[in-house]
Length: 182
Image (cartoon, rainbow, N blue to C red):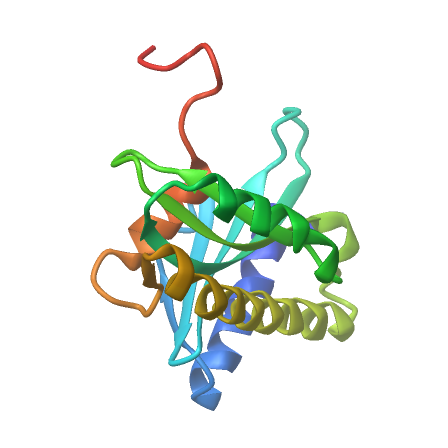
């Protein structure tokens, strides 16, 4: 099992490698000493959020979420949700997500969640796997959004101002059903 410090170390190394290679611009969104360690990866054809969080079961286990931002500010439409659901079997890793956010619009993309147990600081393949998934989630989300924005509206994630906040808000999401406003 990988500790919180080891997982953030792996993510820091991956971010440094992508950033130094010029493949992605990588920004640290939250301080790694907090409950979440979050990085935003951007390039002209992908926008990805990577979060390391403690498992909700109260154990010391961690999980890693890799989410590609497809589009935001999309008007809600049942056909959009149907399209995303019917495309879910086209994803080899992870799948599409969509969430109605605070302003009533839809944010969507692709998302993969992994237990940190599959990662190891001793196994360099862990780094390659995570790097590959960052790339895949970003590319798949962009292709999906380029296909859907002309039909349903919205804006592609491009790394513009507040795109990181928009994607993170969609991933973290609203309160659970029945707890709104509490």
